[in-house]
Image (cartoon, rainbow, N blue to C red; front, side, top):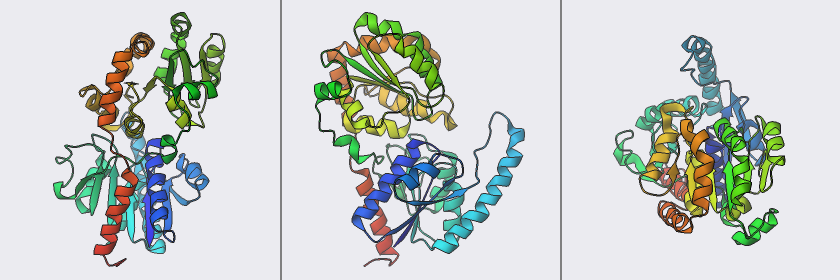
Length: 367
């Protein structure tokens, strides 16, 4: 069998794509897998590093704030459609899987035009425009939230959850051991602040402004700053006790296990990881995403008492104070942990491979 997997742009799209690919390989060791991503985006490095081949399209996202720039975007989209058509023709996939991101639209559209069965994996509580258009001809749409019937054909929606990295659930340490392993005091509470691979500027600025408060409260913080401005944030953290800033955390499983509280953006992939791990969380949704889907993701949890939501505009005045207050409130942490864990949908990658298997059987690819 041959599987074409398309999407990317952020870790929130890439990690589910790689999880599905890995699950396919476990089930079908001889499966051929080809990724299609967007040129100059992080998937062009992350996917080969994981052992898979990838082809890049020159596609780019539409600029909603400066519409005059979209003339070039339309030109790149046309070029991407032509290249995607060639990829589908040359690779002859038995299925095309879209995980969201700029490249998935041209790739899955090209596959659908020549009758290749397609499967969508929608991570968010509010779907993007591309997936809503592609869903009309898709064999199945795998979702992580209920109530998406108004966006997708109801008979093709399957609640699977979002695939998460397998290594996150295999940490050998308990919380105290994890803190010590990372160089923190096991006796003191620890807040893990995650800004993503590139960095969340509001979260980082809020942290910098409130660094002294951690020391005064006796609260430790592991601050993952991301790429942009990393030197500035690291220099600020070096001047205060109890806070460690790092551009990238290679062992997220241990960092999550050590954390008594997590502060993060509200990307669907991050939320799925936090649900699986049952971590008490403050979500600061990014306002700079399509359809404001991070705020909708965060609200879906906050309405269920499964997370605390602080809007981006309020983060500078509220984020650090709330984190320190919450990490010292064991009753509140316990309730948040219980409620977020109830929303977890484990083994999403295996469930998606089950659906792929059904599609292949229906199409006669396997018996």
